[in-house]
Image (cartoon, rainbow, N blue to C red; front, side, top):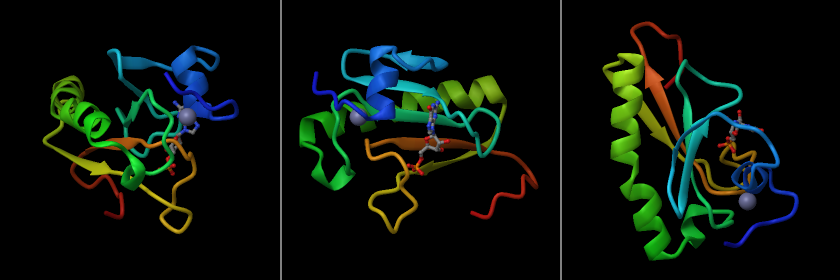
Length: 116
Ligand code: 5GP
Ligand code: ZN
């Protein structure tokens, strides 16, 4: 598996930084966001270090994106919510802070005050 030395998410994959994992398989990891936009905010990442979704190979894209419905279902039942957002920031003007591809699963609740 390709890892990049100073990448926080690669360190989470390797267990060098602790995280609350909610799903893991050979190629994909999902864990709780350290600064959740709402309770139950999850990040889904490929274990392969790639900075942007537009640079990801098709096979890895299928693996990581293909598992999102299952993880989202688990988040929905765990949190008891009826709505959620899927978000991926790519590039410096998008709001991306961690340059290792990730998908945000953000549970939504009535009048939660989130701006989107
Ligand atoms: P971005 O802005 O790049 O789309 O989102 C990066 C996300 O990673 C942010 O929501 C931020 O809270 C989360 N994050 C940053 N560092 C850590 C960390 O060390 N652990 C966890 N679990 N999440 C992190
Ligand atoms: Zn990485």
